[in-house]
Length: 138
Image: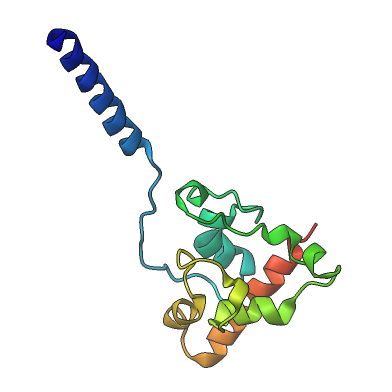
C-alpha cells in the first residue's frame, strides 16, 4: 500500500510544481522613452502588454492580472456614445478615479513625467495617448 502511495504523492507534487511554473507572471521593467508625438507608440510600449495591441483587454500580461484589463475599445459605448476624454486624461495623469482599476495598473502620470522633458511634453504625451485611445473606439 505504501509503495503505491509514494509514487502517487510524487506525481501529485510534480503536477503541482508544473502548474505553478505555468502560472503567468508579470515582469516589471522601467518604462522606455518613446516619442511624445505618437500616441500609438506610447500605447504599444506602455499599454498593449495588458490591454492588447487593439485595446480589447487581451494583452499578453492580462492572464497574470487578478482583475482583467479594461476593454478600451468600449469606453465611448459605455459612456453613452461619447468618449470620456477628461476621464481618460485624468487616469493617465494619475487623478484618483474609483474606476481606475486594480493596483496592478500603474499610475501613469509619474511614468509619463519621468520619460518627458518637462511639464509641456508630459501634457503632450497625455493628450496624444488619450487621442490614440479615442481612435480605438468601436
